[in-house]
Image (cartoon, rainbow over all chains, first blue to last red; front, side, top):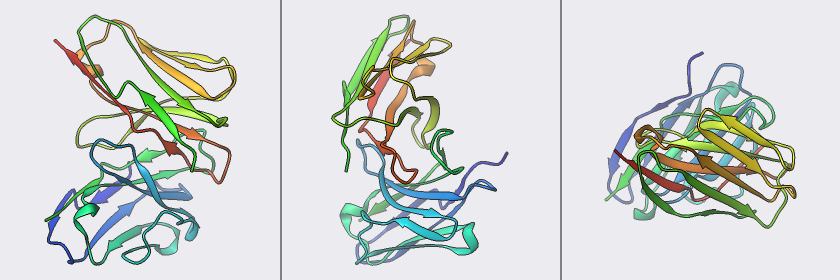
Amino acid sequence: EAGVAQSPRYKIIEKRQSVAFWCNPISGHATLYWYQQILGQGPKLLIQFQNNGVVDDSQLPKDRFSAERLKGVDSTLKIQPAKLEDSAVYLCASSLEGVYYGYTFGSGTRLTVV
Amino acid sequence: TQLLEQSPQFLSIQEGENLTVYCNSSSVFSSLQWYRQEPGEGPVLLVTVVTGGEVKKLKRLTFQFGDARKDSSLHITAAQPGDTGLYLCAGDFGTDYKLSFGAGTTVTVRA
C-alpha cells in the first residue's frame, strides 16, 4: 500500500512569514495526526483528526498554527506568522481506529525559520 | 500530559556488542510501542506490547514490557551498523487513540 505522503520535504522561510504543509494519509485510515519534532526531542502531538473532525488540539498554538482536514482525507497545517522556535520537522501520521497497529508516518517536512 | 523517560539519551557501541535501552513512565500504559527513526525519515513501528510481562522478539531485537505496564526495554544482540538510529518508545494511556512519545535514544553502531 502507498505510504503517507507529505510535501514539501524542506522549507526555509524568514520569521513572520507564513508556510503550509500538506499530508495525504493512507487510504482508509480514519485518524490523522500532526506532530512537531524539534531536534533532539521526541515527536510532540499538535493535532489529531478523526475523519474530518478535531479530536485533540490542546497543544496546538492556535494564535499562529491552524490545521484542517478536508473531506476526511488530505490535511494541511499552516503557520502564520512563523517564529524562530518553529524550526522543526513536522510529521504527519495516520492510523486505523485504535493505536494497536501503530502509526504510519510520512517522511516529514523540515522547516527552518531564519 | 503523561511523561515517558528514555535512557540513555545516547549510546555508541562497536559492531557485535549488545545494547539495552529503557523506557519508563509514572503512569500505566494500555499499550506501548517502539519505533526506529533514521535521519530524514519518519519513525517506523517495530513492535507493540500490550500484556504486562510480555516479551517479543524480532530477529536480534528483544522487547520486554514490565509486569506493572509502566516500563519497557529494548535489547539488541550483536548490533550491526544498520541498527543505527533514533529509538523511540510511545505509550498509549487508553485515551482517544493517541500516543505520547519519549525523547528517544540515539544509537550509533560503529563498524
